Image (cartoon, rainbow, N blue to C red; front, side):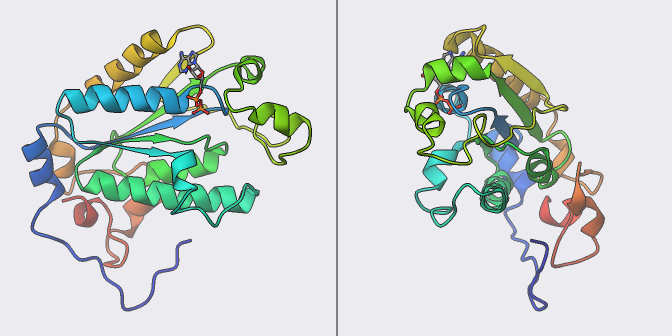
Length: 233
Ligand code: ADP
């Protein structure tokens, strides 16, 4: 959805992302966990959120099941609805990013294009895509909510891994195999990758030199769709 109403413009505040990052003492970041149902996204997101919170990080968590109770409660699991689901949550993640948070997102997000879109909403270097990898057979064995069993009985249709595709990431910054490692070991790897990003300079958001990995970089001259120099001060 690229349409913007003609008389709408981006309102910049005095409290910039740079100021928020300075107050928080760390840069903002979007951590995007993708993987099959039951691969461990929610589990890892919750552990990471708790650990970051304990370390006084400004952290927020978005979870696929939670957003479907409200923000995306009107959406199903058709390809069109899945895309709209990710479009909305990616925009929410970008808003939380703009407010200085480390935003941990746990979404199956099966299509490469929707992950690329989510990545495009924040500056390069501020999106950590994590492929929470797990063999389909192991996910089916875990089946914590019985969803695979239901899908295989035909009681759920369009279920990723059963009768809907999952496009494996090819450019994830981190791949963790939860079939090989336990929760604690996997969480340590994830937290290490996040800590690495948080220890990097915050300079990326303070000038016009920030670059975007995706579409919005080219819209910088359009006040309705600000690029990094406008939206990320
Ligand atoms: P998802 O959010 O991807 O659907 P969940 O986190 O809800 O998956 O469920 C994953 C299940 O797998 C949980 O029961 C969790 O305890 C288990 N599990 C086993 N090993 C791991 C691991 N290394 N990381 C995360 N979860 C794991």
